[in-house]
Length: 284
Image 1: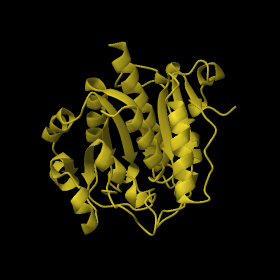
Image 2 (image 1 turned 90 degrees about the horizontal axis):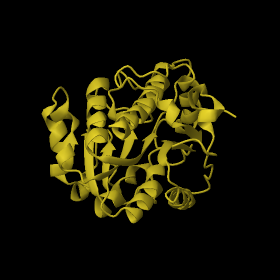
Image 3 (image 1 turned 45 degrees about the horizontal axis):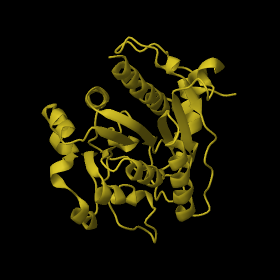
């Protein structure tokens, strides 16, 4: 049995785990550099070489228990992938565990978010991303990675952070007062509390790794210059967990580069940081 970070099976069994980790290694609609379907394996390998004590929170988050679910391997069409992810997430939401998801490309989030907002109509979706992903349809499908947050923009309280690339057609779906463009927030912190004040009590977080600057995260399908840095991003995420009820999150778009391990190690640390913030919130 392979486990996250090589943790002992007593922390990784379904029965003992508070956290479920669902892999969706789908990469069929990405339009430039492929490889996000290989992200989960690279992430797991990196996690096995990571210290499990977190200095910032003075915690060992793995003791919450982290269970890896069987991967969703559907790839016959974007429509069928959406349906399978949506139905799977609805079932998972009936289980009293914290749900985490790992892509794959960003289109995997469409079905996840739909299941979450149907169960929690008052949910806020927090999107960290270089791209707006608000297209109504792209290349003949509304389940393309470029459409990942379109439905969320119509049905949820959507907060977008780190955006620095979009098509003109997306402007009609953009809520400017809730979109924090990278050029306006890099090097600043005053925006953080303002963004959090726009969120409701319940939050789901979707993180496209290209939100980070390519200097620290180059292993994505569509890297964009001018992205967010490590510590400010963690500060923002920590404050969300501290002040809101985070119901789950996904991390997408890790496309490993051969013989270059830093990006997947960053992602393993990022995932574990989020679990550490959750544990700290639950203990206070």
